[in-house]
Amino acid sequence: MKTMANMSLEKVKMPEQDPNVRNKNFEEVALGYDEIMAMEEATRCLHCKNKPCVSGCPVNVRIPEFIEKVAAGDFAEAYRIITSTNALPAVCGRVCPQESQCEGKCVRGIKGEPVAIGRLERFVADWYMKNGTDKTEKPQSNGKKAAVIGAGPAGLSCAGDLARKGYQVTIFEAFHKAGGVLVYGIPEFRLPKKIVQKEIDKLSELGVTVETNMVIGKVLSVDELFEMGYEAVFIGSGAGLPSFLGIEGEGYIGVYSANEFLTRINLMKAYLDEYDTPIRHAKAVAVVGGGNVAMDAARSAKRLGAEHVYIVYRRSEAEMPARAEEIHHAKEEGIEFLLLTNPTKVLGNENSEVCGLECVKMELGEPDDSGRRRPQPIKGSEFVLDVDSVIMAVGTSPNPLLRTTTDGLEANRRGCLVADEETMKTTREGVYAGGDAVTGAATVILAMGAGKKAAAAIDEYLQNK
Image (cartoon, rainbow, N blue to C red; front, top):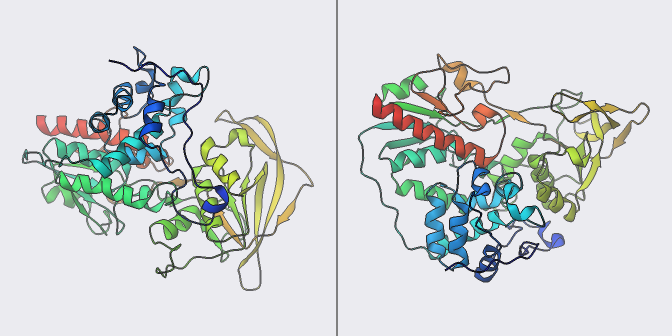
């Protein structure tokens, strides 16, 4: 029996830490729904016959089905439905851009707010972590081996799907900890690392082996993996090579790439006193860029004690690629936005330390190739921003190590591996690739979707081999 639809135009509000409290700690900002909140929000779903929300999900979560179970209070079954297609629900419920994917296609969003699909997914995953009793059963082996390079979202998704089909899967991870961008990039206050670890532990229960400190291309080559008996290889090595602006002064002490800054904080725990990871505790920080990574870096700098943190972005807020929620949270926490502003030079003192950022004001002109209006400098508008640290969050690209040490792998002009969109097959026989290594920096869920596609294609390839 279906519950009568709740026609409220607004989502059930998500409890959060107070902005002036949370900007001084690294605990999770959003506190999550309780059972009553989740069931109330679930009744807002209209259970549309054509399920537009599902088409907006890169891993095709059976959204109306799991929401129906939440409304009925059957959270265990809701979890089973989600995990039939999504291996990392606690992660996706927190960091997916639902507003442009599943929720972006929700009919309730036409007049009012869409159903809070992401919040419900998070609730179900968190509830199951606390209350679930089912043991993960290791599937019967099919006698075939597959190697996965990179323990980020794409690699974890691919490994999980292959393990469920009976493959002996080994993940080779360059860092000392599995998780990829989930552990080195996304801050604790958005994605607690214990959540990531619990999701990875489930893969271990399926029989997946994770080998850390394994830089493929140095420790082992792709050729050597095949020689070791692996019959297929999936490359999910991400896009961890940071970009810079190429302006004067980027070599001064106190200039970080967002990648390095966030890795020191998130993976190397620089925010905890018991860790001796070196990091600069600046008084005033400029973060250059307008994406989610820029928001993460700015909010982290604020939590490390900076009195002033500026987002320096050359376009207007309307063009910012960051999620609206992340921009909103950053503003609440006291991050200052300098929009239509472009850095031109990093200033340094006699000790080669950052002592300012020279900028120029911009105005928007004609659209560029991306469709966004091209920013142009305003003559005579130069000024100096008084900062002692600068964080560059202007994009990343794939590390060239793998493609330069593996014969037969083609890459495009951006250094991304060439792979078929449907099968994720590369130009090298038996080698598949997906996630940021193929697309450049993108979202967690898109990487997971690529991992799922690759797993299905690898299974077909090896079964027919």
